[in-house]
Length: 367
Image (cartoon, rainbow, N blue to C red):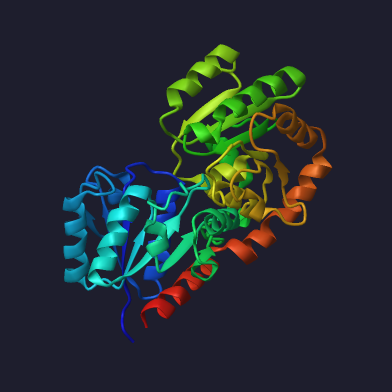
């Protein structure tokens, strides 16, 4: 059987859910016998991660939609490596990557990770040229059909698959995990895992913390923020302004997310936009955590039989604090949500489901 060759392209130099999805997807498809390559910027963090994972990486400028140097570089790579499929991810690399694929005659897949709308202009036609489009959530898929002239038969929602063997609560000793993060035995640990970007709305998380600390003076509440990013200085200023230095812990980037989730009592996601199906919510649910998440992007795709608390996205502090208060006040509620959390996510959004779905599409396109 012919070995399928896929070149992924990524313009971003950050390291967050989108970039983690790309590397995770590449590793998963390599297990199916696919040969995978990555083209990105020299300074991109994903370059280091891809090389560490054993993939061949090509560094190109990716300076813009019409960067001819990058376009020509991609054409040469596609021809030399005999690439079957070019899979693009961000706006800028989608233009040069998609055009390079079309010029050479390779198949073109566009993955859309974010939920913010794409311009409707006829001049923004690159997505229409794609042979297939992957989105990370059903709402993103429907929006592109409704507003960007995408054929419903060539676009599919494939949320990021989470490895249920890694995110398995039975593998982790909760007491030891809490010790590792300096959590006291009698504290109620409330946390968020997210890159420190504006749309993740850590400001709401901190305002919630301020309100709840005042509301429950007799409870030992502690709030943990896991992640790194451009909003760190602003977050530190708000913590100081609210006088939350003793109540909020900034953990920075974590490589041991399952252990952190095992240690938490309540997981909260406060995003107001741009989410596909958020990986952190899937991970928390797989770890049988009590989850409160805003209805941003395709977060609602994960809601099934009240397996978590879904609240409005945006500046609705009342809904956020009320939801967390319910779980603080009622241990039986916490136990109920935790009991329902894992099964639906494992059955529907596991790494294996993602792997098999993408591999079948590769085969249909190439073989």
